[in-house]
Length: 132
Image 1 (cartoon, rainbow, N blue to C red):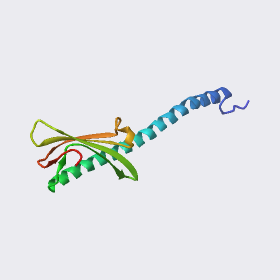
Image 2 (cartoon, one colour):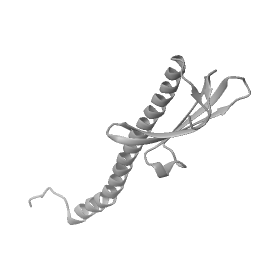
Image 3 (cartoon, rainbow, N blue to C red):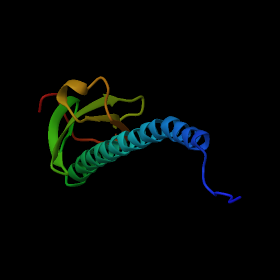
Image 4 (cartoon, rainbow, N blue to C red):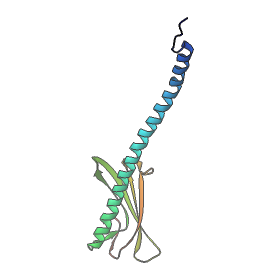
């Protein structure tokens, strides 16, 4: 009698069932990783925009420019995408020190859910009113 070596039909069906269960779970994990990568990319870009705006304000003050009171908004292009920012300055208990909050979002309507918020404190003696 010859012995045959191979898989039985039951073994093949069990292997296919294991693959059929594992493959969708692996694809779901892969899609979550892709989504997370895009979110982290956008968050990093928003951080760069906020840091650039904070640096611009500090450089302006070092050159003798005026610091603003209130709120300013605008948009910047970075990595071929428009980023919307809102800068809000507030007085502090310490004279001539201001709290500056910069909020950045990928869309103008997403101010309530920003990608990044940067808060810094700035010393300024030349202060302009809001809207200047």
